[in-house]
Image (cartoon, rainbow, N blue to C red; front, side):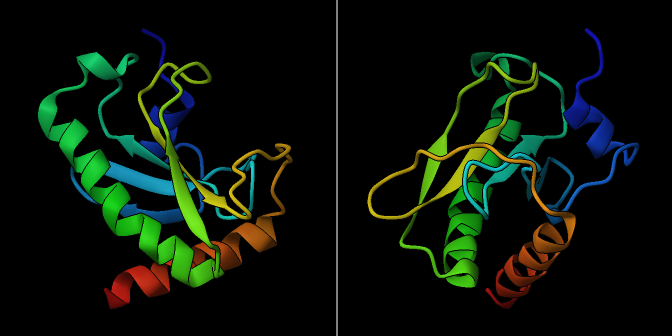
Length: 131
């Protein structure tokens, strides 16, 4: 299997707006967000289909989602955070955490402004580190 863009991010070959990292997972802002604050949680093992992900990586991803979603919500003042597992864009299992406003998760993907993404990441990390 060819290395995914996420594997390259994990190996620090491509920069990201890092939110969290440990031995099993990494979380960062999506550079083409549906909404500001759109974040990705990616296991540090490249597995395409979610049913094939080893249990410890799968559990680590969902555990981080429970911890990261409230931090995003508090940092950005959003109403709610939605969780999505799509699995079609990148051949590497990942979770999407997407801020929801007015009961809508839809949005138009746009390339994120680097300065705005950097500031969002800083705010989210700050809240996450206080937890």
